[in-house]
Length: 260
Length: 241
Image (cartoon, rainbow over all chains, first blue to last red; front, side, top):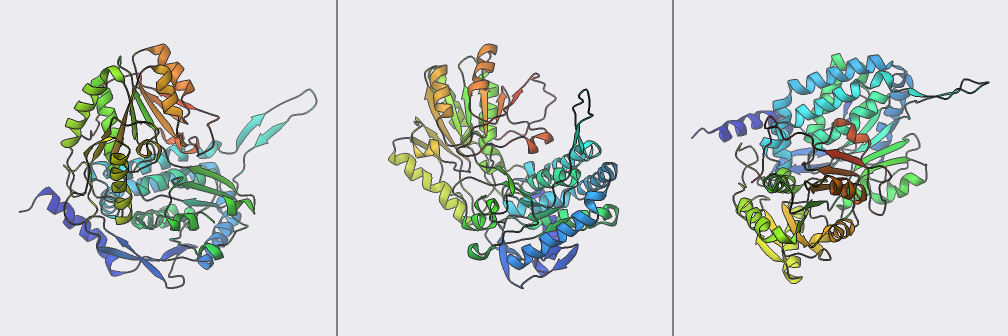
């Protein structure tokens, strides 16, 4: 019996093969990084079987990622023009659309969300990138407040590296919703995907690393981090934290992660 | 947030919700029913803006809840890659335990339980659940369950609907169904939610990523109102149920 379902499962398996064979590493400063060597497992909600092993970050990994994001912010990304960022973000959107099928299938298996909804996840993610891409050229536009004697004006400047913590329910779409506006503004990002569904974050980081998206390559550092509460660092270089989290009850790991 | 305070981090949270969908007797009840079911039974109910509390005017409560229950029972639970599937497995066994724990709480507090329980013998599949004759003080009306679980509460009039809608710790989103224009604006401006949709399910433009923030204990300063202008058939909606 070869139904549409069987075919989808077979396709998903092709895409998942790489995750089954190799542990998912951190991506720090544009490079694969095994970190401290510790891993955790991500499971399929369909039967709770292991899909992949994923690098478990700690204080050191977060620290390295934040420093890389700070360097990328200071030396390149914040110095780009809005028009340049607009072009790059549109290229990211193009690449997301090109891998829409793969993103949808992996998202569906990793989260358990029905494909009828996840089939649009990538398209919506790309739409988020396009929306914010088009706002990049005017991102630094502030207010003009002239008086009799002075020309007063404000400008808006990127605040710096942003820590982005995203939830497990529809991770790809929600990650783009946080990351795209930060990048458009000229900020860099340290992303901590949810432990229960971390896989599509890998695809997003690969897309951003493509040569066509080159200037963004050191920007979205993917960090799968679970930090011990007692030793979590207060990163002085990260200036803003954006989170989509549930108020309560939150799984313990979320509470830890939020302490960045 | 507590740790970020030490280094003066600016924080931006989108948190949970126990979002009301308020259905008045004068609403287009077919569309309201579609939207009520869609906004709780799609995406496995694992959605911050899900309409997890349906407040239904008493005069239509029995009919509306009966129709909702009939539709809910037809929802297909199955493999997430099956194109026919409307509800897939929940994210994690721990989350399944949490979602199912509310059935006992609902029975204990005297609500009527329709559906629910595990589906299948492996994986994290659960059947959609509808809690009827609920009161807003119940656990199932106050806590975010984050699964395919709808709590339906009757109300007598607009004032009571507003009081119930606002009597939760959350305030992320709200949905109104009414044909009374004055009431739509009045209610939308008074309901304590960061985003309010009138005669519509959630339709969030990309810009909302930076605008929507509503937190336990924080009431919104800025409110986004979305009034549906068109009821076009051109809009393809993948309905749950």
